[in-house]
Picture 1 (tube, helix red, strand yellow):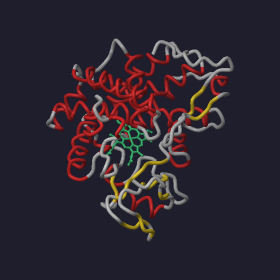
Picture 2 (cartoon, rainbow, N blue to C red):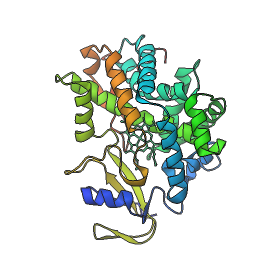
Picture 3 (spheres, protein in one colour):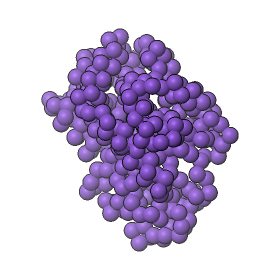
Length: 322
Ligand code: HEM
């Protein structure tokens, strides 16, 4: 594989890279990252809608969209508010606010998937570890920890019995494929939604705007997932430039002309409605002290923009009880 990525940064190039059949989500010679081969993460990764193209992807995508559509706005909102109230109840520090932002989307989906009621903190840790091994740029240690977490998530998901999980199984028609993609929902929802909520909190501290308006500002100006990647499946061209088979393309989701906060084309995010409702629920229940927002850094990530708040006496282990 050629290592130097081509950069797609104009509206036209982004649309082309995300919709042309000459570009895929994985290099043809490495459908699963080598570091995950032989680990519990291998089969999960290979089954994810996000990591496949063509007919397999489009069939899975329809099934996942149908399962997500099964829950109406009111049900998602009620679940999100209940979960947010439970998580926010014990929140007293900047570090716990960071943890809340990651935990909320995971716990809302977990609630409807019917997984891990008793053991939320461990579930959140496992999903965050799994995200680290799927997202580009993970270290050897992160890949190893993520693979272990994948095995634990798989065991957990085998016990799931919630309405979203039942729908996924019915729509996908294959239980192990449904389990992998249920885990996929947890990991896909986590960073993007945490990034949206964190940026809304920063903006709300500066200006008087409704939560709905803040969502629009973030999605338009600073997409929480700001880049994605594609690989040339054959020798081809992008914006007239030649690319060789295997060459990677770094796709910028914010272009001067348009923001593609939820992607574009076959892999466009199916969770936009859920993300907006969960973010509104977070803002409606939180009573944030301004000092929690005074120190933050951006998550170390190649593609997600997530504010991580911390206090002056920084304490990375301070995560509240979740
Ligand atoms: C603000 C929050 C979110 C943002 C910014 C976001 C962004 C994105 C983007 C940009 C993609 C496309 C990636 C690509 O084409 O390479 C994507 C895919 C995906 N997202 Fe989201 N997402 C968010 C929340 C969610 C939620 C809450 C869910 C689940 C309920 C979800 C489920 C998915 C799935 C399953 C895919 C893969 C779709 C496919 O490959 O066909 N996302 N998301």
